[in-house]
Length: 110
Image: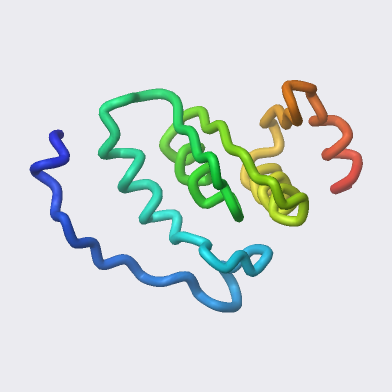
C-alpha cells in the first residue's frame, strides 16, 4: 500500500512511564510508532537505525520479521538494547563490530 493512502496523523498511546520505559532513554519511541514507519517503507527486508537508543526500532523490525542494523554510541543504552532483544528472542546472534558475542551475552544474562 502506498504511503499516500495512510493517515498522516497517528494517535499512538505514549510510553508508560513505569512498565515500558527501558533504561529511561529520553527519546524512547512506542514500538507501534516504529512498526508503522517500517511497514510504510518501500524497502522490504532490512531496517537501519543510526541512533537506536533503547531499541524500539529493532523490536518493531523483529516483530515484523525484518533484519535490523543499529548503532548506539552510549554503552549504557547499547546494553539495554541487547538485553531487550535477548529477552524477546534468545536465538538471535549478537554482534559487536562484526564479531559474534552471542555466547558472552547469554553467559552474562544467565
